[in-house]
Length: 196
Image (cartoon, rainbow, N blue to C red; front, side):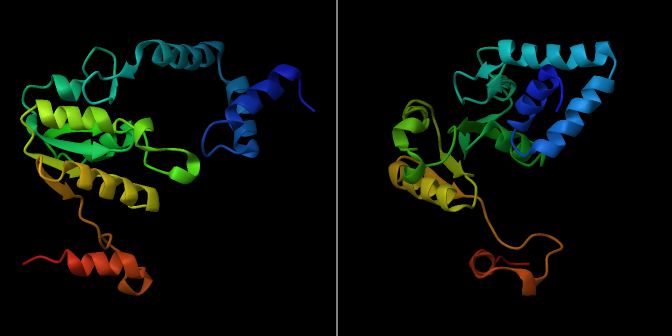
């Protein structure tokens, strides 16, 4: 229906997560209407990020240098490591301005059904960091999904006795109604209650 180059652009955009065929078409037509300078700036930004970004050699977060900005920051608490599934989780936690330790990015979560076993994640590297560095606590911040919970349980078992192992609290969201909360969320909110 479209010229082959437009069809190709739509097909490539539709491969992005969360982008269906209709959204890909809208994006493609937006790019066609954009100035050549704007379209080239987008293409250059994609090319640059693919050329310059690599995993941090310590925590596997996104980095342009050997170490990411967080690992290179001497003001961070090196005795505390927060374990997350993906670099996007680091960004979410950093937005809170509450956490001042270091991170460790696993690169996913355990999922035997999908063929993701411990050797496919950066678990061995985490264990090496705990053994080699002066780590007092590992905070498990994997997603509260079936695979995230399984990963947290596996890591807690492997880390037990080496350092303190904690898990992000879970419970009711701010602004949520009790009547709409599922049993697991409500149960965790009750278990994690605290003094006021």
